[in-house]
Image 1 (cartoon, rainbow, N blue to C red):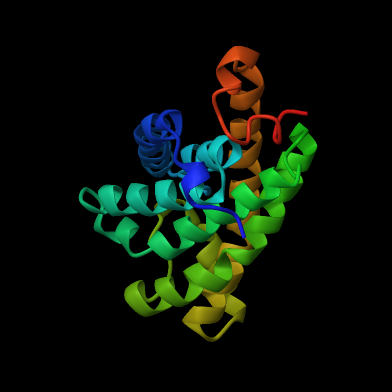
Image 2 (cartoon, rainbow, N blue to C red):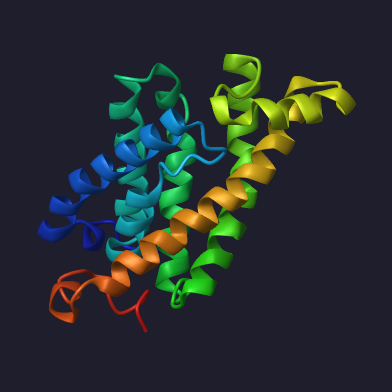
Amino acid sequence: MIPIKENFTAVAIALIPVAMVVNIAAGQAADFLGLPVYLDSIGTILVALLCGPWAGALTGIVSTIVWGMFSPYAAQFFPVAAWLGFAFGILARHNGLSTWYRAGAAGLMVGLTIPFFTAPIAAHVYGNLNATGFALIREILGISLAGMASVAFLENLMVEAADKAIAAMIAFVVVQRMSTRYLARFIQAGKPVT
């Protein structure tokens, strides 16, 4: 078992609010532009890469709850954000994000698990997904599929894998651009940047 305490160094605690701002700003920008991806997990993945799975999970949870104060639909998805941060922290611990293409593959892998969390939430709470960039996908899938839950699941399956791959590669590039001296402050610094 991974000790929770080791994830929460002073530097990690200072990074979490910055990562939250990155999540919310990138997510709002993607929503404003009507992109068919969320981009709201870059900060969570960054914390998971550097600090570990527990810090990544906490970053995801707190980000979605804070974002939920301004955008009510976001808070409903805090279990998704927790899983995302935890999964990326585990993958980083095992060098699953040691190159840009491994980061992308890890993002695809984690993204394929996300619909199991999001589809039931979206279908139950909203009747389907509510993001504006998905209207065309919904229409195409809705023509041939009967249930809203099926549409939400397949929609999420397509989008989440791409979204998490992009977010993981962006987080990987950010980590690669950090100085070795700065990276030495983080518990998992040696793991994602071999």
